[in-house]
Length: 476
Ligand code: GDG
Image (tube, rainbow, N blue to C red; front, side, top):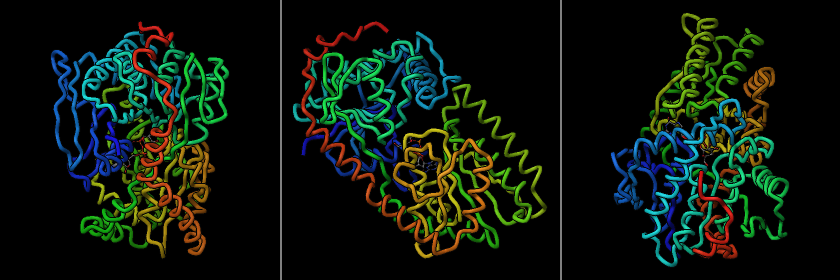
């Protein structure tokens, strides 16, 4: 088995896997790398006065990591700027929040080049290189220019945007052309891959080769769909650990004679948190008889707080949760427990298990692992019901959930009522089908399928040749 080099923006392998970390990519990659002789390279999260290009090597719970420090300007332009203020909102169809600053694009290219310069000397002839997410799309192009001929794959954890929105990005064509320096480009769902193909064919005049490949810009890239999953056994072990069980007991006691609903999401405008609360408010208005019988535990760790849009949504959610509690609460009942903090993974598993209903209602989401964790945590004899947005990538696989349009408060209200009154036999039937999907597509299946496809991909790129053959302009 060749060595696997994983590259992502942050190296967020948790020091203690049972504690976990709030982020889908972090949890998936640390689970994926456990089984491989590998190296994980990315930003340390620290800044330095002057970029050195010298990574720090560490062992994190059995995973070898190489940490790169960046300059403050890099963090501002590449991370807070192009990644979080440009590509993230655009890829989640929030053109209203997308910033189109030239300096962000320059910082993005600079940091991608820097990462490539750090990585190139570490690469051995048989290594496979697997790049993750929108932060690092052009890194393969820079690696090719530095003469790296290894197989390089890219996986996008977010949705791919529709062509009509992608073209609002200055230099959209250059971004897509960078993806043709890879040997394999992977997405979570057929829908995201279709949208990528649509751009390549309709905007860039590329062609499908009939074998899962795309030809464009004088090059060919293999494409594929690889739905990510969770580490099912690891998650079940966390659920059944002493702290997982204690948390379940605590939550079960605190929800005696009441049905608990749970939401777990980073504080992000893509997760549909406002819409969820408004849908729940509608439910409370539609069903006064349920007052006092249900409550929502919403676990929402603060995320990307240096970006204005995140501060804005945080303030709006504080106000909304406060308003709903103020309007409906009684002396012994509060409809929403809104928790801006991070819990350990084993605690989360216990919380999920105690919840009669899992609310996963993003407005647009690459996959969404919370949906899979909620299902995995349930008691097979008396499982809860998953309400899932049809706009999460997970909906492509999890059709047995109650699928909803999260933009409709009435649909959300009806789904909550349906879930709370669903007979046990129906809950068990749905849960079994969903659990089968969660098991069949767990994180090791995802990793192995991707790595096998990368090893099998026809080699398209050839070091210097790839760099020089490409017409991709160098300037930002
Ligand atoms: C991106 C894509 C895609 C959350 N709060 C706590 C906590 N979490 C964990 C959850 C889950 C993870 O964070 C969130 O994963 P998601 O998949 O829901 O979402 P993103 O972070 O946006 O992830 C997404 C994913 O990448 C993988 O490809 O599915 O579409 O946007 O594991 O449990 N974990 C702990 N405490 C918390 O308070 N320990």
